[in-house]
Image (cartoon, rainbow, N blue to C red; front, side, top):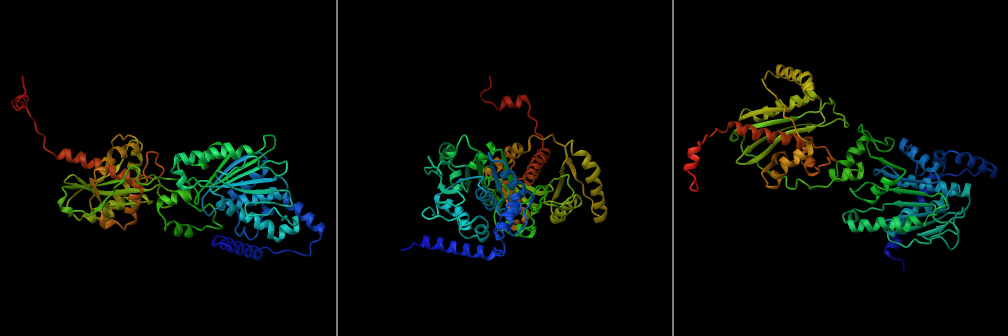
Amino acid sequence: MATAKDRQSLAVWEEFHKSLLRGVEVDNSLTRQDIERQRAQLERDPIEWIKFFFPAYAKYEFAPFHIRAIRRVIANDEWYEVLSWSRELAKSTVAMFILMFLTLTRRKRFVALASATIDSAKRLLLPFKINFESNPRIRQFYGEQTTIGQWTDSEFSCRCGAKFIALGAGSAPRGARNESVRPDVIYMDDYDTDEDCRNPETLKKKWEWFEGALYPTRSISEPTLILWCGNIIAKDCCISRAGKIAKHWDVINIRDKNGRSTWPAKNTEEMIDTVLSNISTKATQAEYFNNPVAEGKIFKNLPYGKVPPLHKFKFLVAYGDPAYSDSKKKASSTKSLWLVGKLKGVYYIIKGFLARETNANFIGWYFELHKYVGGKTTVYSYIENNKLQDPFYQQVFKPLLRDEVERRKIQLYIKGDERKKTDKATRIEANLEPIDRNCQWVFNEEEENNPMMQELRNQFKLFELTLPYPADGPDSIEGAVTMIDNKTLEMEPVVTVSYDEINESNPYRM
């Protein structure tokens, strides 16, 4: 009797089979001579070959990075490549196109597909198997590929001479052969898992299995393709280890450096925004930007709480961290401005702004914070302004401030913070981590649903000394905290104690 798992696998196969047949039409009027001529023509251009044989898959036009990868891998018989393409960029599908081209054209004869588990490997091998069985154009141009007695979900040999096997990490691949041929394609896909990467010993064993058991199944004297597909899901993972030694490591994110979709024919900006809005920043960075970040590694508390009435604060500080870009585009740097106060030893992050904005709107934020305070207490406004930033401050921000003062008919002064600052990351950690550890700060609970407050907390949660994620918000908070401490010292009365008074109060004096 079939198990539930067997029935589920059968249902997947049947749906896959039906969709394949629906998407591939065959021209039955072609003669054998026509077929031979068209096949030779298609094999000269792998991109056209893929489009012809896999129209059900190639529904969207290839992006330039797809075309480069296909041509690069096919052009080299001896090659080691890692494809770290974001989710939804079709890395496994493109790998299948490449390997089916190489096997049907008899360039490669033995594909060993390895994954984290044998079930995962079988799942990845399924599209190959179904296409060899049921793709009508492959059958028309290359003949029937199935063979009797050697056709299972984990191993099969095609009439074109190619053999495919599925392996889970830790399997016993030694001595694997297709007649006299050792594996000439070693294909790793979905090999890393989150759980394995959290365990250094497990990760070590998986890498050693690849290096010590699977990789040596190749022949020294015959060219071999080593192909990995996977995202960089951890600082140390098998994909990153393979990438460091590969001939080519292709890292492609869902968006490019300019903040635009890397595959606009398939993934529109609106759809990317929709998908990413439903998951955490941590997950977004790992799955779609190949940027694994650890949450809560340095700042672990970040408590929300109620802010006292503003009139109880002796003063507040609005501290801004500007950026040179004058744009709201996704590729521009973020600007940050936060209103912070201190009362009874606790710092309160009251309200602020953190976004990609124009310089004029950044200056406008200061006025909005002053309007928010409404004269309930004094507000000191600062802007980061070291020697390198000073020309920009003088030539851009000062004129914008004058224009805004004139427009709003409100007098407001912004003082440049001209401190000589140390390294950004170490400064943020050294000055703010003890405050978080001792729960000496509070994030305004009334701003909990404000996307800018949420982004500020994300930047703290994902903060590391290597700055894998922006830290403009924390930089502003560090500036505000420092200005508050300096201003508090200025306001405290200086107490002078004479040498005689010190001696008189010391019972241990000589």
